Image 1 (cartoon, rainbow, N blue to C red):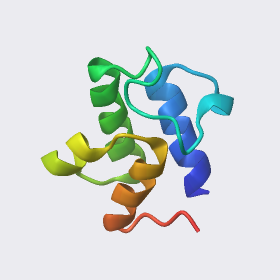
Image 2: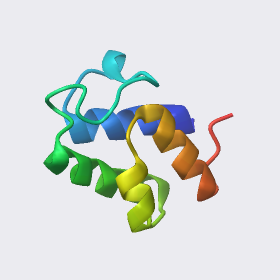
Image 3: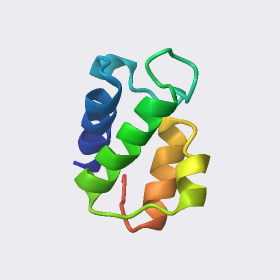
Image 4: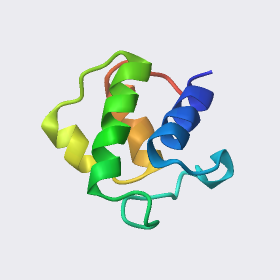
Length: 79
């Protein structure tokens, strides 16, 4: 369930197809994931998972895989 929610959050924020949302997808690796889209993504993740990310985690979120690690710190499981 949370994997689908994470994928949808990335699709919504970056306006890319779900097929592109893979663990290796990273900030700056596609033109759609620029600094503006990053902040939209953060807002979307906070909304979808009902969390408030701290500044270090926002800066550290460099890929889909890293997003899972960070969200896990806030009690979001991807098992």
